[in-house]
Length: 410
Image (cartoon, rainbow, N blue to C red):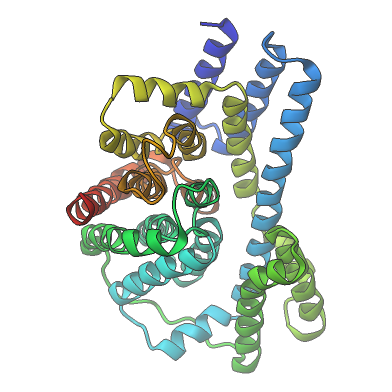
């Protein structure tokens, strides 16, 4: 094996190790992620297998897609923060009359599930984790609620062709059709969520503390405008044909303008309070994964897995579990390349199982999905804190969904 390939694998493994043991080494995970992404691309550029110009083109293409995610993330965080500082979430809680944390826990989980199926798991996680941050103060509560959001967002994104990138890939690649995959995967995905929430519910105790009342009129206005601008993003995409991040940038800019003339907290004060370590952490992780994909390390891994495991159903389940460690996108891309439609026709149970497993398996580890990585950055959750509380319920839910799918389809 090429020494540069070995070096890239070792750098990724070391970075993963340092992120997992952040509390022990006292090195901020954002620093590790950014350094890991930069070093992997340095090694990739030093390889003999690709010309310098080709490497530059690959980096530019990957950085373009990464930048879209970061811009989208920044805009969404700003809008949610603007709702919070003006009391919009407190106003909503009082309207719903939710005092019990258990009741709120299930509401958050179910809303995240369906919201993710309409938007996507990344946007849903940003919005719902931000909501949880404003409603709860105890770090343990926020860990459990946030973990539930990650599980729900990934499960909700798996059963629709627009909720998760991998399901979209299978849809665009002609492996699944929208109506059939939604019918096939809704119940496994929903029961995956229910099983996980049932495992987590015993850890949720007590009632929500009532916060100081704020100006009702201004709070409702902030909530309605903020929610409206978030919902406007997919409408903007449909009307203009521009990518979603442009809609989020437009919405954030318009909300900022309105806040300067209408609210007590103008956009300038809000943006100065935003924590940027989360977006930077996400940037580093994405750059690292894209470097591994450019070097074809992840594609090679997927092909080796197919050679070692000749049973397609088991391959789909393993792809889901491995996606908790490495990115699920190249794994699904490799499966599309390895199995053609003559072997597994469109809408066969194999492709549907791939969609479910790739979408939900990443919940097992906090670094295994975009939703988990965003949650990690927003809440400063350590790798082992997530492992201790969330991983087992996520795995239980994952296999419940697998067994339900196999029972209904095989």
